[in-house]
Length: 436
View 1 (spheres, rainbow, N blue to C red):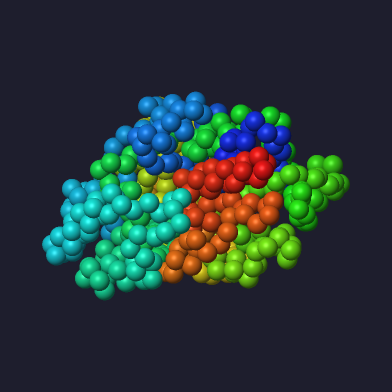
View 2: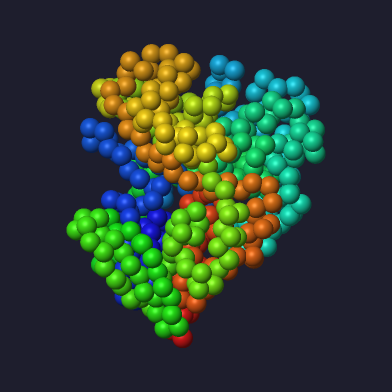
């Protein structure tokens, strides 16, 4: 149930079985969506992935037929707009040193980067049931930077748009362990970023195309009832507007815990109240389509100090004369305001607010925009708040009976690698059950 990366990965690893993938939305992929403007493909959600040089991940992408050599992002990967000026290669020692910060702040960050390099040898938060340096999960990233490292608030503000976009909340609301783990990948000399023109939609498409029968979209799980030998499911088909029942040997519930808790019956075995520990932020992605002339200082372009959006990607990065272009703007909503407040906002109003904010930083851009498309309006993104990873790791079973949970939120980290690992784990659990 669910054709995001976790569900698609699980199904991919169970292809030798009779597998049926049901998805409530009209297309598979979850947050890995593709948009198109005048034939130009662009990422309408999750845009890039890490570790294309890691042997295990490299084998995974190669197996799916994804050309990694063509996907490696050229430097500078990231650029930061700070106090009206661009700072390319901001997530590197040389780039960070160019920021207008006191010398003691720069020296402190250099020491932190060295610590991150040392921790990188031992830290493996994804797929592990234990936590390295668990004391860092008890405090916020802002507390760690300012209280324990003695860095000024300006450093925290520089990392704020990154935290909001990648972790769902600002440095004051995310675990130091989670924040440092993500920043480790950014500052690492070993990791690389890779991206396809349509973003991670290509990965989702490769997984979906490998499945037979294909993903059944427009099918929503209404309820399920487990027994010793099988699981009975009630499903609603939105196309035919009728419900039907399925009996399955194993069910992989590849959806967020905020929704899974509404369909899991009490006899399923989980303490449903434990899912209240999962907290989410809301997200909007806006695609500004037209003849955008703005220069792309990095692949990922960060903007400090704006509540309306955190970063953007330009497709293509370097346009040809007369070529259409899309500015994909990532607009995480202020945490922890109620998601209902966003949903009460008319989409046209939200699109206008994002466009005004973009034009404030980059005058003239609004005149070049011909169309605006909104995606992930209100999408829930897991927030690894202080203490959450410690409460999560090893304390919530992935499987009870013949029902298996899978989603990146069960890793506590909102990244595609966490979703993929969850799918792999779920497939392993299902295989053991089916063999037994």
